[in-house]
Image 1 (cartoon, rainbow, N blue to C red):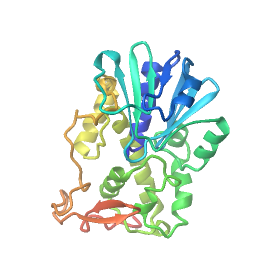
Image 2: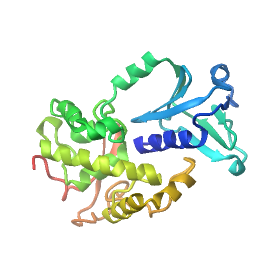
Image 3: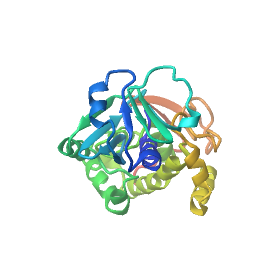
Image 4: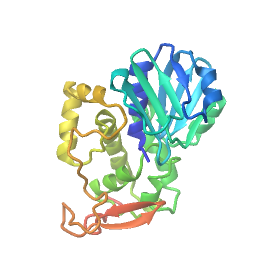
Length: 290
């Protein structure tokens, strides 16, 4: 399932290529044809993301998209279009770019009240400016500290933190040496603040490069590129059709079951928790309170 940085990057891509101008909207697959006709020819005013939810405003009508496990939504220059292997649920065409949505869990037109109801169910989003600058960590902590569930499970709960998926869960817990089975109510507040601050740092890098970056050498290199503006050339080439490849794909624990931990040498383990496979190091990840 795409994590929150992917959806925020998609919103930015839609705004950059199709925003603030009339667009042609259709449903080649046919399943969204009637609703597509309602927004065909309207101005795509703005796209926004919260967690794993995308909202696209067309005047007074809102398109709500959630990609779910298998959905994809790419935006390409017309010159780069290739013949599709399957018809799109939704196609948005501008003068120079085309966006195509396939296999979403949600693709629906909603009103502002319905959007507000969806947003109210979500926890703070490390990529949402008010949550980043405000007390996003504190809002999440209110739920965490009252729960008997393991922190590894709580991190996947979108009502606790919006946008975090399995890869970030595994990697951020490792980066802070946290025992993933620690009940939320037993986790130290300082440890949680460290995790939140790390998510605030890591997710924007994932958004910029369309890659989950958690190895510190890659994090440092990506942050430097963002700071000096050289990352923009990478970002603007991305279409959302596939993962970025500027950095080598490397992780500390994710999908490394049985391999030696790169910090202590113990074997990485796996266990299903919160409906997804958790990968962790039993040697390194023992912190709970400090």
